[in-house]
Length: 81
Image (tube, rainbow, N blue to C red; front, side):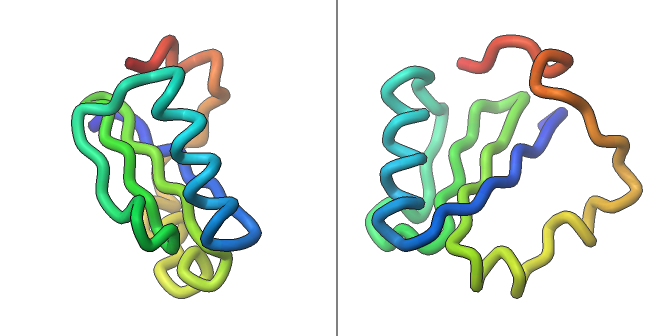
């Protein structure tokens, strides 16, 4: 994976909805966590998208784990899927 995208929904249904919308537009190689909607991982090989319920995003703090990685704008990533 070259890039991580980290996003939050406001509820389990919102997290699922955001992930499903992305999946409709770009077909992932692999999906984890969609039924529960607490943390959905969409694997596009070069890009991994994490969509979190706010409580889990705060708990896992992926931004802290990858804090030394330089942030990039979405336009720099290129097209996904």
